[in-house]
Length: 96
Image (cartoon, rainbow, N blue to C red):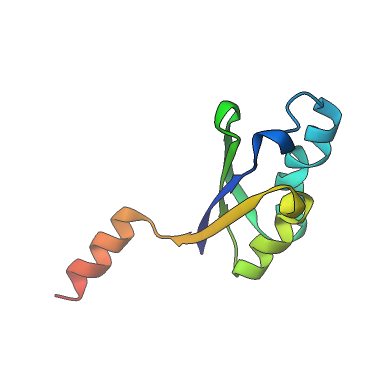
């Protein structure tokens, strides 16, 4: 199952000026996801907006939550299940 994750933090909590801390937290999420059993499809950031994005493939939201462990204390994450658009269209067509 695919999940889209949006993580935001407040400017005063930003680690942009502390590259080692940034690497130890946000920079370690991809590896933490893999250890939790989730496959990272991609990860992105809009630094000026203090917003990070991931798309991951995982069997459960629990695996995604475990993968976010390095950054849970640093802000707010929204985890949303997502589906492939073309697969969804085909599924809807076949149910007509």
